[in-house]
Amino acid sequence: MTIQIQGPVRVRFAPSPTGFLHVGGARTAIYNDLLRQSVGGAFILRIEDTDKERSDEAMIRQIQSALAWIGVVWDEGPFLQSERLPRHHERAEELLAAGKAYRCFCTPEELDAQREEAQKKGLAFRYPRTCLKLTEEEIAERLAANRPFAVRFRMPDEHITFTDIVRGDMDFPPDALDDFILLRSDGNPTYHMSVVVDDIDMGITHVIRGEDHLSNTPKHVPLFRALGGTVPTFGHLPLILGPDKKRLSKRYGATSVEEFRTEGILPQALYNFMALLGWTPGNDQEILSRDEMIALFDVNRLNASAAVFDKEKLWWMNAQYLSRLDYEALRPHLEPFLAAAGLADADPARLAAAVNLHRSRARTLKELVELILPYFKDELTYDPEASAKFLKDQDLPGHLEILRERWAALPSFDKDALDAALRALAGERGLKPAVLIHPTRMALTAAAQGPPLFDLVEAMGRDASLRHLDHFLAFLRRGAEG
RNA sequence: GUCCCCAUCGUCUAGUGGUCAGGACUCCGCCCUUUCAAGGCGGCAACACGGGUUCGAAUCCCGUUGGGGAUACCA
Image 1: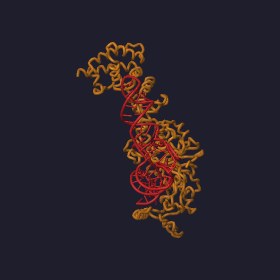
Image 2: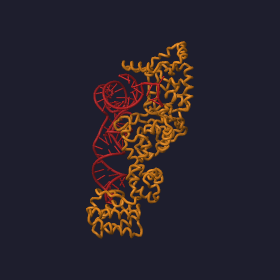
Image 3: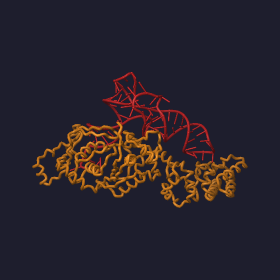
Image 4: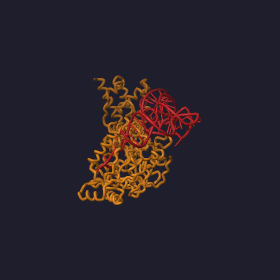
């Protein structure tokens, strides 16, 4: 089965604002974005906030900001579903008037009892259409008595079939569906009523959503028809699983876009990673820009099986972006992390030098900022354990003292001059350069490993480098005394 | 319970009847190198199981098992 999608399409992403944007939702949004961008059309953002108790104004802004951050672009909206309630109600009344829906006076208690009964017998519960059998008089009677009622959709007695973009041909027999509720007894539309009405009114042509909606679809298809709408093409994406192969949950760490953002993941990396969790461009490319993905996107390559969210691979991918991005492109993403570390006013040139030297050594923006801290700190804290072998070397303070003086006297503090001076000193003293290089790195960064030393010293600059050397010398001498 | 969906290395995946089952992450070596990364090279590692169909099945069909979803006057 090969599906050919002709643009322009009208797709939508319709999250409910019950929390931060989940990575599963982000991925759904990304596929909608890719489809919209690749064939043309419009991406509509609709907030399904009809469940007022679970909706929150701040979350709506949060979701928009998360979407914008990962680079998903919407053309229309956000529309609030709650503002369209009168419309949903109106359309339900039409169905009622047309005999495509009917009033149901059964109480929730009665229904629960029946459901339990069916369960016991090992059968699927189907509403037995008790109220469909009511006569005009009986209905009038109940209405007059002010009995509360819900409005049920009258399911057609036929197989419901549709072709799912990711799963192929679907066929649901009539006895699998029942007359679901359109309007609650308080007059509010249910989710099913609202989505279908909105999708029709917004002219949605393709519905790409989570697999949890697959079994809702046979309800929606006849409802689209009853309302005189065109049935959109559906595509149901598998869920994202945690390492335990269960639905991704908090217990394995971050699950929301916002959390990855604060961890120091780049939006480009997250977009790229999520897009590849369930879709492949067909070649062996792993790192793709949004534009490349748009060019290569094909719904036929959407995977039908659930994928485990592999944090390790996301981290790897982020590291790729960290080292590949132009400094200018990287810089804005670094900003909040710099601010948090008190480096908002760091000298731009030194900052750029430090970042460029360390970016291939960090996996997240957070780690990267950690690595460049020594360039801007007055004093470092040396770990006696990590410096143990330097503390043992009795001659080292003497060597470093001379090195410090020679470096201080250098007319130009550049890597070649620094390199030459250190090697000359090592030669004079019959030492391998490494004997001086490693303690010096420790002195400047308080770390046992890092970038090539002379690049590091040049980037750090004369002031900070000499200052750190002085402090390290003091630390060594103190250690030797104690 | 019932209905639906899914099933290739530990993980993400390529593969649409004939491949040494390919790539990526992870892990392990080697190279590069003042160290650590990055990079390069190489290695370990998979078709869930059982029946068919076929000259030939990872690929098609049926079961089993496993996982997931849905079973609401939630969305």
